Image 1 (tube, rainbow, N blue to C red):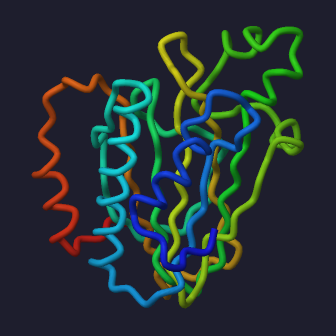
Image 2 (cartoon, rainbow, N blue to C red):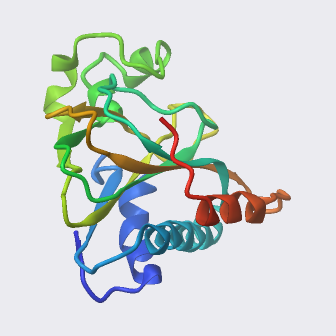
Length: 221
């Protein structure tokens, strides 16, 4: 989705049902591309504001909220397997891509749709691993590809990082990164935010984590 004049609240509303899906009719992810000129700090503010709006919607629909599992900024050019990130059983991943000349893509695979190819989906869920260990070709019919590199634009991918557990309200997806033209002389900066879905009355200390993320220019390798 190309972001034009939408407010952060409008972006959250457009993303919510797609990401916090309860059936495989929704893809489980949203891609937002920003055409306006931004600074890295302004972009990080968009990420944290988007988290707040999504959390408010989560409270409204599920009586739960979003709590930071981690939020980091890294410069990395490594391929990954299909996986869900290490987090709570129900969680959301936001990846904020800063402009880069490194061509890359994010592949997102709907493991719930894949589970429907089994005799029963539970046959797959009972052996579920956070890292997909079979051949990637098995997931190919259920995989979407997103170009995550643009030398002029910032973009965000929000995806459902949940595991298939009985206590989970929404349906997760796998994701994997592919670097298409690795060049360590150039940067590929990604802001990674994992958000656990927790009880609405849980006491959380999010302000310290947010302030550190917003006001620190540290980039991990």
